[in-house]
Length: 335
Image 1 (cartoon, rainbow, N blue to C red):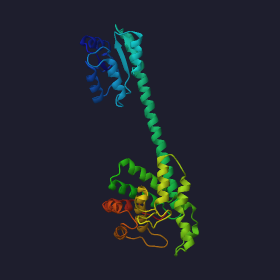
Image 2 (image 1 turned 45 degrees about the vertical axis):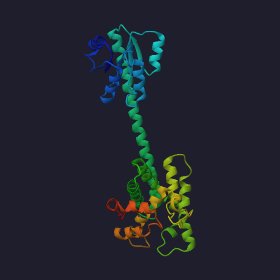
Image 3 (image 1 turned 90 degrees about the horizontal axis):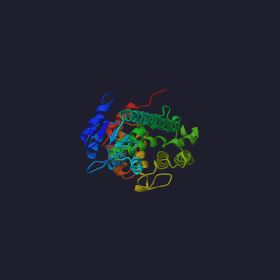
Image 4 (image 1 turned 90 degrees about the vertical axis):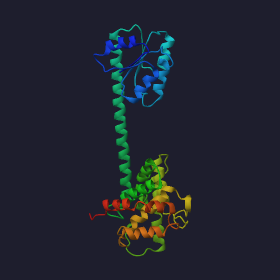
């Protein structure tokens, strides 16, 4: 508990009434009180109003404006007992208003009540945070499972999605994107191939060369994936739809489905394009052997400025050890 009063005798009076039940700190000015609240834990504040330089009302306002101190209950303890003063105290964020001379039993009862309310509020806030985190985790898990569903038919373990998500985040961080941007990409990339759900098995599993019509159907998975995700205001799903639609575009404009070129291709789509191709090259498929990391890296470097954004290729090449670790950690295993 923090007692704030510019008169030492008032602090001594409150200290005598409260020291048996509470750990006490004291401040003789509003500035000192704010400094203490920012540097050490304070559960409740007993605040005088009439202080020089910064009065109690202004001190309370500043405490309530700062997210670090806004939740601390403030009880005004003052000789100013006018209704207008009480109204002002509540208006600036005070929890209670006690006029002097104080009665220790009243002060103790008010303090217990506000500490109980404060504890209840903190418990509720913690439960809300935990529940929100649980819901977010569940949503992300469902999203990743849906992404794996599109790959599971094409790749028995479904680990292609996991690897592409990790590669994409590594490349994003290498490019200088923020942690939150890289995390958004990591989660949104899970749905890059969800449109494969709509590709017939006869084409998806064909070991030989595809004809022109079969290639058209394979390429339709980008638009199908975008449609499956749909139109949303939620940033994660908007990003996932953009990646699903754009991850087969090429830097030189010869990709699909929209033949976008250069920076017209969404950044996340350009990143996932490299992650996706690297994983395709290093994975075994019915129609090809798995390339070595060195072979795949050489191919991506060769396609710099044609298939891929040169800057993103450079970012990818700077993180090959991390990329290789992901490839080993999430290697495809026979079921």
